[in-house]
Amino acid sequence: MCPSFDSVFQRSPNTPAQVDFPTTLGSASAPLLLLGTGGDPSLWINIGVVSPLVVNGETFTDNGWTLLAVIENFAAMFTDNPLTGNFVYQTLVDPTRAAVFAKLATPGANQRWSQAFLRLLSA
Image (cartoon, rainbow, N blue to C red):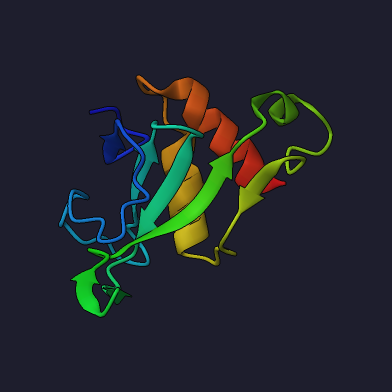
């Protein structure tokens, strides 16, 4: 696996239970990042906080993974406003913010996506 992402999910990770997500937990100072490549590229974060999901009365776990950002408009990454048509769902604070930025700045196999998400989160 490349250093920027701890896991790459090849299909849409927006499953109700997210049961296929890795179960290893991160922490606020050492978050885990997951790249979702099915559909619009998505960035998920795990800081070790596991929450229940209730779908149709049935309880599942999110395995600690929450949606951080989605890129629907890759061309906007190279404009003055990369948020045009793209979405950031969480505001990161240090030490998590610094750890995420350091991971995304690390060269790896998915460099194009890590740089795009770094630019998006830095906007």
